[in-house]
Image 1 (tube, helix red, strand yellow):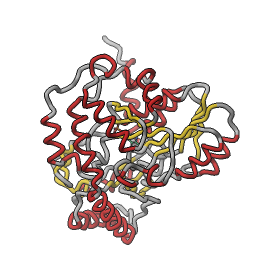
Image 2 (tube, protein in one colour):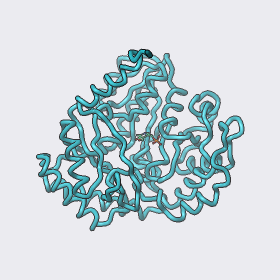
Image 3 (cartoon, protein in one colour):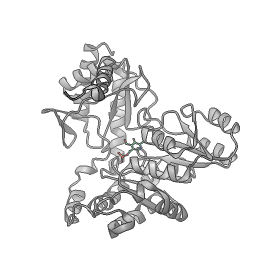
Length: 386
Ligand SMILES: Cc1ncc(COP(=O)(O)O)c(C=O)c1O
């Protein structure tokens, strides 16, 4: 009889996850405007990163479909995958971030891995904010650099750590933090980095096309001059893929050495066309204004009811719960009451600091927000969150 010993670890690990309330399971989600059909039940969608609603924009969809003459280039960029649309998109993204150049990756995750491992090595030290996204954490590990974690948005701690280290230094932060929704203290970080001759990298996945003049992101909005911009096109742009923006020589370095760029199939041309169509719509501005008024309206209402929302200053609104089980129960009750927001648990956030990560979009009208607020109140009372 075949030994079951070699796969026994699978059930053991799943068991541990289930008993400690860290077990995750997939739900089917079909998006319909600001609503979602979640496992067959319609609810107000409160956890999409499609902050401006552009993933469902008719013009963007039309342009994407028109460009669809091949599903994929079926080749990496350096072999035969470099479609002209890849280059056109990169030129638009560089203009958008006000940098010399940009380079597209298949995802934001791989852009972080690809850029960070290309600029950091075992002879460098990375200083990383404690709340940085998993893709930054993974990239730091993979780079072989020494990694020092500074307390969230704590310039004094960053300075203290940087003083203790010799050699090449790199500081990495998010622009808007993905699980708390606050904004990086970029001017302070850049000033400290300058004192230590350190390179600065910002993952602006959640601030891109949301903040700054012409919505060119958090660094521009704060007047901070960072060396390397990393972002995702699957958030405010409503499309797909990631990109890195910086100097022309940085782009050349990435093309020549970044393994996540070299050894993977190019972002398909029609997805580049989608982003090319979405960029002018995102830069137009009206959508961000609607989003902003939704944020104020929803945040004020939830605070009035008694929810703890942390220090969010953006469309990402963490509804802090604490115990994992309570967050799961709250999320279930919320769905029953007609609103959909997932419980976020360890390892995405610290143990015991589970939360619902609400993200608003420009598509939510006041009527829907009122219904969502009522659902939060009902679910909150049922589960003793408020
Ligand atoms: C801060 C941050 N960086 C990078 C990523 C990865 O982007 P993508 O979904 O395009 O891989 C995410 C996505 O969740 C993110 O929140």
